[in-house]
Each structure stands twice: as C-alpha cells, then as structure tokens.
Image (cartoon, rainbow, N blue to C red; front, side, top):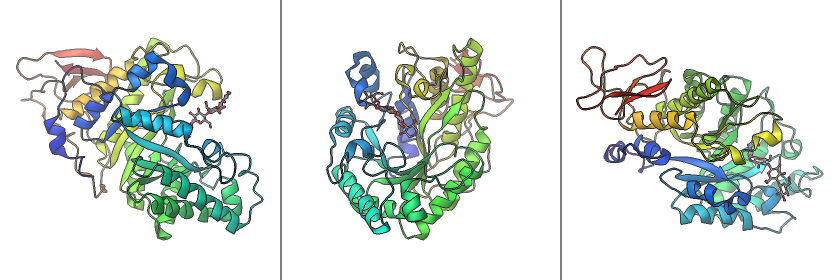
Length: 409
Ligand code: G3I
C-alpha cells in the first residue's frame, strides 16, 4: 500500500483547524471514515459534514449493499441504494468500504429458508458475489466478504449458510470475491472480536481457514460496537490485532466504531469517560501499523442504529443529535494530531512482533524524553494518565483541551 508512507505523513502535517481524515492520514493511516445511509442524504446539515473529505476520507454504505436490497428476488439485482452512496463518496473524493456480501441478517426471504442443497447454495453465493462485486469492481477499497459468522462462544452461527455448507461457505465466498475484483481488499468482519476471548480466537481461525483453503483474505474488520466504561485496554486491543496478523492477514480496521451509553442522558463525567474510551481505540489503531483506519458507524447520534436496538441506550458517536462535536471528537482529533506530529502518548503498549508486510511504520514515535525535553506544536503535554514530557518547544504553551488531553499550542 504505497500511499501509506511515512514520507507522505511528514509532508502533510496539518494545522489547528485540521479535521479527522487529514489528521489520520498525516499520522500514517489510510483514512478516517463514517458509515451513512440513503435516507440521511436528504438532510443538508448532515451532508455538509459528511461530504467533507478532510473530515471523512472513507464511506461505508450502512445498508444499501446488503443482500436484501441487492438481490431482492433470486437472479434479479438492484444497485440503486448502494450506487447512491458509492456515487456520493466518489463525488466527494472518498474511498468506499463495501459492506457486506454474506451475512445471516438482512437476507431476502427467498434466500433465508435453508432448504437448499449444497450445490444450490454454493451456486447462489457464487452468483450473488460475482454479480455484486462485479458491479462495484474498481469502486471498493475493500469488501466485508463474510460478516458475523460467529457466536459469542466462538462456535459458528447457525445461519442458512452454515447449516447447508458448514464452514466451507466462508472460503467459497472469499474465492468468489477475489475472482470478481482482485484489487479489492477482502475482509472478515465481526463484533466483540476487539479484545481477547473465544470469539477473537475463532476469528483468527477463520483467517487460517480461508488461507488453508487457498483463498485470499486481506483483513479483519473489528466492528467495535462498544460500551462506555467497558472498552478493552489499549494493550488488549493491540494483542487481538496481533493475533489476526499472526494468523495471516496483512491489514486491520475498526469498521463500525461506536461507544454507547447504556442509559441516558449522559453526564459530563460520562462524556469524559467516552472521550477516554475513543482515545483508547484510536491509540490502538495508531500503534499497530497494519490498522489502516477507523470508521464510525455514522457520525452523529441523530442517525445511530443503537436506540432502535438497545432500548434506552445511545449517544454513541462523536457528534450529538444537533451536529455539535462532543468531547470525544476533541479527544480523537487531539490524539490523531499528536500522532501526526510524532508526539508522546500514541505508542504501542503491547510488544508488537508482527507487522503488516505492506504497511510502513507510522510516524507515531515519541520525540520527547523526561528531563531535557520540548514537545513540538500540537503535541500532547498533559492529561489524565499522561506521563510524558510536559514542556513545550519555544513559542508554544501547554494548553488544556480536556481532562485527558493538553497540547502544545
Ligand atoms: O428500509 C426500510 C424502510 O423501508 C422501512 O420503512 C423502515 C421501517 O422500520 O425500515 C427500513 O429498514 C431498516 C434498515 O435499517 C434501513 O434503515 C431496518 O428496519 C433496520 O433493521 C435496518 O437496521 C440496520 C441493521 O444493520 C440491520 O441489522 C442498521 O440501519 C444498520 O446500521 C445495521 O448495521 C449493522 C452492520 O451492517 C453489521 N454490524 C452491526 C451493525 C449494527 O446493527
């Protein structure tokens, strides 16, 4: 991935008004992105933020590319919803993570009844993927080829695909996607695989399963639908990523990040906790070279999926329902900015032994040492839990940003 070079990062260190995608790229990542959905694109205030490629360099269609919409009756394909999002991204110079091909949920009724023979369902998967990936060929940075194949205990989910084909449906899907678009990165994507556990181990086994079958799998997508105050430590997040790299993928991404409150309204201290939780995930991605980017699952609480599924929960995103930036926004911005300028506080907490073969080191290296030190402009110089240098370079002052972050301005 030649565009991810430290040289690019060093050439493009942004200023104080820089936005999330600019900062993420300057820190050596490929993008900072957001999911979106068709209905929201008529909301002008919403679109004005989403379309800014300095803020979001990557878009994921939240629904429009799912089987239910793309092959509503067998052999009859429709790309109207997906195309609207992909066209939006292209018009705004944003890359697309395409989502998703084989998932137990949001299947059309004709495909979900389970009364197929193995050859019939293999043919159905192959036809669906050949058609959809073929339609979007050259337009998707990546595809979430198989989504949420696992139960929480690491066993396979009893989907129609598993019932008929066992785990062989997974490499079948990856082979079909590879054949239809050899240039798209191919991902396994799931939730609750961000930290250690049976499901994380099973996700690493899926990587091996696909590779052992001779198919291509490039990445693991960690959805990261997390809960305020219950986010795994940075070290645990990094260890899980290392397990996927050891299993054989070359890249990783946080693909659907949101961090929800289980009860509302959120208190001021809760919002600070949420900011710290976003900081943990952001720093983990920054610390692992192969983590190419972070996608939030829509950017505003106005359009989050959470309240409709978790009664009473929500406020999970970086912007509130009125499009105001929350404390977590400032923290993510500050952390990315610090990484872009090579300041302290964004290095790995885990022993990183496996690195992606195609991604060079990020610029996230500490420049300060205790004692005789001076943090350069934008660098972190304080905040709860911060133990690095607190002196700013000549001409800059260590300024309070939030409880977790002060920076040299
Ligand atoms: O399109 C219909 C519309 O015609 C109808 O009027 C309306 C009435 O409720 O429903 C609309 O469909 C909804 C669809 O989103 C589009 O808005 C479905 O009811 C609703 O269930 C569906 O929810 C989506 C959910 O996946 C389905 O499981 C969410 O928007 C979407 O954000 C969510 O995304 C998933 C990822 O794909 C995979 N990982 C988990 C993530 C969150 O659940």
